[in-house]
Amino acid sequence: MDFRQAPFLYILGSCVALFVIAQALFFLRRAWKQGLALGLPREKLRSVVTSSILFTIAPSLAIAATVLALANALGVALPWMRLSIIGNLTYETTAAQAAMEGLGATDGLSGQVTEPAVFSAIAWVMTVGSVLPLILLPLLLKKLQSKLGGAVSGAKAAWADLMSAAAFLGLIAAFISRAIAGSGSPEKLGDGAGFVSLLTLAAAIGSMLLLELLICRKGWQWLTPFAMPASMFFAMGAAILATRLLPEGITQLEWRG
Image 1 (cartoon, rainbow, N blue to C red):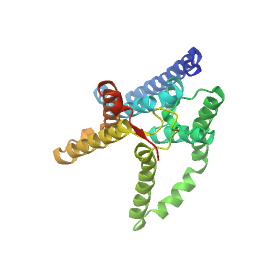
Image 2: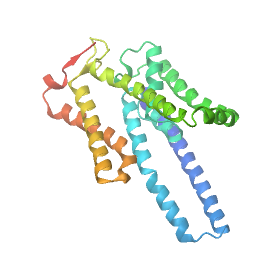
Image 3: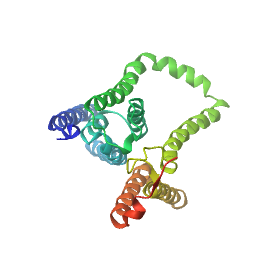
Image 4: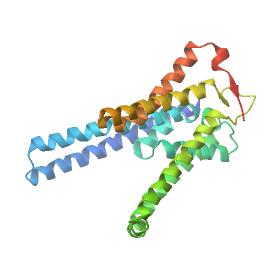
């Protein structure tokens, strides 16, 4: 049996998910009681709870898409546990891929982790990398905010925004370059770039541009938090449909840089 799909991992994941849900319900109950104690009307509290639930839909879609993106390499259980607590697409995929490449895997997230030791090392890298900020921020956040506040105030604010955008674009460019050029092993199908990777990239870009057009031209601001997860799901769907409907000679066309 595939160790990535071991029942123990799903039991552990269920325990983690139940703990997170119980924690949320605990603080929701405490907040509701505190709101009533402050004299807030029940209708107002219900409105806040409803809007909060709706606000979590878009981030949840992005989380689900990240689980699917990591499932091929790591199985479902580990990404599910990780993203039930903390993490996002850019961090989880970057940490997992960096750990795999550091351990000698050349196919990145397109391949499957078949060795328990490698799987364990990847889990540790993903976990420790996200635990450190939770420890350091309570100790250093006040000093960091005071330093950063002075560094990005006034005329420097535009420069700080530009550098932040450049860092994010550089991260995205690293993933795009693999979809275009490819760097995998010639002996392994699905390890390089090819028709499907370019189709997935084009579908993601096209759907994102379309949604941004609707947001800007039509004023549909409510679409903003849904744009990225919707584009990810659309691109995944396009890749699945292409793989199932098009001839193998097209879907298996690959090249490597």
